[in-house]
Image (tube, rainbow, N blue to C red; front, side, top):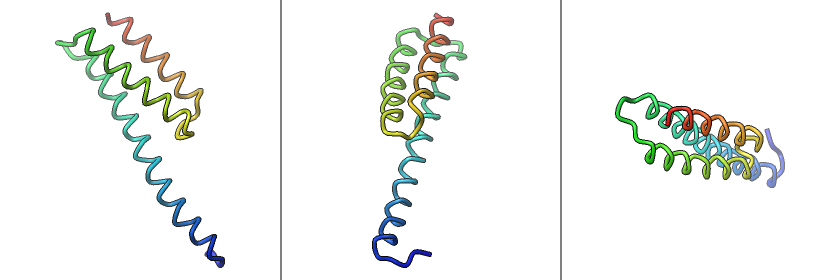
Length: 89
């Protein structure tokens, strides 16, 4: 356990940051899952799917720049989603 006052504060801060990063990662995964399920739905619309893709792209880029996911991982995710959307429509 931490002995110094600054180390204790750092542990408290790290716990909050870790929880925040985890929630942002879960939100990204939920957005991706929603787009994939929408693409497999019978009544899917190209404009809606592309607008969802734009939102996911912005959020993935933000997560990549903040270090929540690796920037290469976010780029690869965006590229694969673009490929899936373009193959359906």
